[in-house]
Image (cartoon, rainbow over all chains, first blue to last red; front, side, top):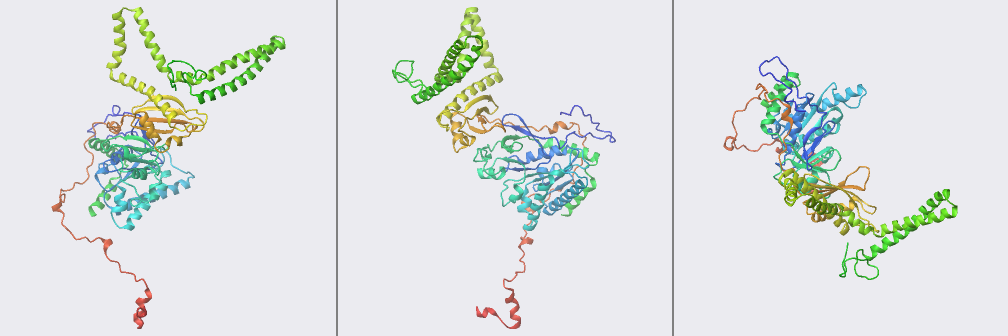
Length: 296
Length: 310
C-alpha cells in the first residue's frame, strides 16, 4: 500500500501527468486503532457518518482523515461545508465546492447535490439498475460538513436553517445508492441543533469525549450509556479517542488517526495537483466559487 | 470451596463431621446425581456389553459378564461425579499445579545433572533474561494476569452472578491478553443470559473483583447467545498518537506549483478594527401584524364598532 517508493515525480517538466494515489472510496478508510491495538477500517461507500463530541474531542481531525482519503481518490468529488473555515479550509484547492460561513451558498450547494442525485437516479432507472458500482460512469461525491450547528441553528433565519436541514436530510436519506456520501460533525447533535429525523438516519456514529452520558447517548443512540458505552468516560486529554458504531453495531473504543497541518497541506496540494491534471476539478468552477465569495 | 471445622486435614463431611471439603447440600445433590448416573450407566453399558458378550459366550455367562462390566463402569462414573467438586478445583488450578510441578521437578533434575554453579547460572538465565527484556517481561506478566482473571471471574460468578437452581456456573473458556488488559470468553449455562451480567452495577462489581479499571461484556458470537466476551480494561492503550498513513501515499517532492487561494489582507482581525454597528437583523424587523379578528378592522368603516359592546 505504501506507494512512496514506486512513484517518481519529475518536478520540472510540465508535460508529465501526476499519478494519483491509487486509492478508491470503495476501499475502507483507515480510521485509527481500536483499544486492542488493531487497525480500524471504516467502509464509507454507501454509508454516512455523524461525528459528535465536545470542542477539542478530535472531530475535525477525524473529518480530515475521511476527507483526505476521499481527496486522494481520483473518482470522488468533494463538497466541503465548514462554518469555521479552517478545519476543512486546507482542502479548498482540492475540492469542487468549498462553503464558508455562508448559509445561502450552503443551501445552493446542497440543492446542486440534490439535483445531481435526482438525475443519477433517473439515469439508473433508465438503465434498470439500483445502485452504482466502482468504475461507474460517474464518480462519487463526498459532502463533508463541519459544525452543522452553524448552518442548521446559528446562521440565517429559521426558514433557511430548516431548508438546510431538510436538504441535508434528503441527501443523507437518498444519496447512498448513487454514491453521495455525507460526513457531518457537530458538537452536540441534540434536537434543537439538528432535527432528530436527520440525526437518526446516519448509519455510522462517532462520539468523541462528551461532557455527560446524555450527550454521548445523543450521538451514539439511546441506551448505550446504560450498557457501559459512554464517551463521558474518555480522558479529556486523549484527543481523538471515542466510541465508534460501525459494522457490528456495538460501540468500539477507537483512537482516530491524526494528520499534522503540514501533512494535510502536502496531501491537499498533491490531491489538487492530480485533480487539476485529470480534470476532476474545473478551474472555472473554482473561479465561480471565489467570485461568489468575493461578492458575498 | 473447603471450609475447615476441625484440625484433621482431610476427610469427608459425612460421618465424623470433622472437615467439610464439599458443603452438605452440594455433596447431597452430587451424590443423588451420581446414583442416577450409576444406574443409567449400569443399564446401558450392561445391556450393550451383555449383547456383545452373548455372541462369544453362553448367553447366561454373557449376561453375567455384561452386568459385571456395567457395575464396574457405573462405579467409575459414580466416583467421578461424587468427586467432581474436588476434581473441578484441580482442573481450575491445573496450570498453576503443572507450573509448580515443573518448577520443583525441573529444579531437582537440574541440580542432579549439573554442578551448583551451573544450575544457578541456568536459573539466572531462564529467569533473568525474560525479566530484563521489556516486551518478553510484559508478555509474561500479561499471561499471568490472564490466569489471575480467570480465578477472579470464577469467584465473581460463584459469589454474586445469579446462577440456575442446580448451581452450575458459566464455563470460563480462553483468556487472552490485549493491549488494554484481558479478554475472556465465557459460555453461559442455562438460567443465565447476557442481560444478567449487564444489570445495573454488575460489570462494576466485576471490575472491582478483577482489580481492573473497567469491565465490558458483550456477545462474542452472532450464532450462539451463550457465548459472551468479557473485556477487562486495565490500561489506556489509546493514549499515544496515531498517525494517519495518508501522507505516505503522497510523494515527498510534490512540486510547489499547487494553487493558492486568493489571499486576504490582514484587515479586521482585531476588535478595534470592527465598528460597533446597531443590530439590524432582517428577522427582527416587525412584520405587519395580522389582526386576530379581521372583522374588527373592517367594521369601523361602516360606523359599527363591536368593541363597544365588549
